[in-house]
Amino acid sequence: MSHQIYGYIRVSARDQKEDRQIIAMSGCAIPKKNLFIDKQSGKDFDRPAYRKLIKKLKEGDLLIIKSIDRLGRDYGEILEQWRIITREIRADIRVLDMPLLDTSLNRDLTGTLISDIVLQLLSYVAQSERENIRQRQAEGIAAAKKRGVKFGRGKKPLPEDFDAWYMRWRNKEITGKEMANHCGLHISTVYEKAKERGLPYTSMTGKPKQSKDDSQAE
Image (cartoon, rainbow, N blue to C red; front, side):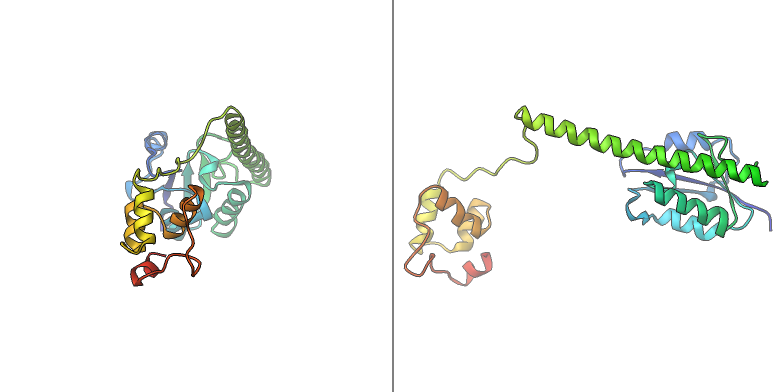
């Protein structure tokens, strides 16, 4: 059986395009059926296309990737997947962005040693850069908060007739479920808002009596 050439492409989110990686592999003689693409995060390495690829890879086959970080999202994952492919499956890997990482050209001991050293260095650099990006993002968010910039969704405003509806509920004219639906709030939040506004939020029994609908609203 002849050896096969495979290509693997990963984009980190579903809305990203894989065109750049496809173009880079266009001259590598990869059969269309042997090109595997994952359009999702590498979290937990749960990638369906990658799993199918690993099952197909055989000894002597060649896997082509554009950059080393396509194999994993951190230093440990990259090294582990490299080990599985080159040591357990005994297939070759070619990294287009780094010609030194081409095990099909360096099969002797010296070539393998060079590839391993370069791989570990690049994997470390890739992880360090991701950590630096996260740190810069955290520092930017902290600085923005000091300037008064607010993040996240704002609190939902209460309806203008909140007080009137609340008193109707307290007087048992409406159910708790009706009250919660009208305000777009959980019933427990209704209690909190009533307390904040200085409204009576307890009754002789500790809170407004509830109908069956009230208990479902809670």
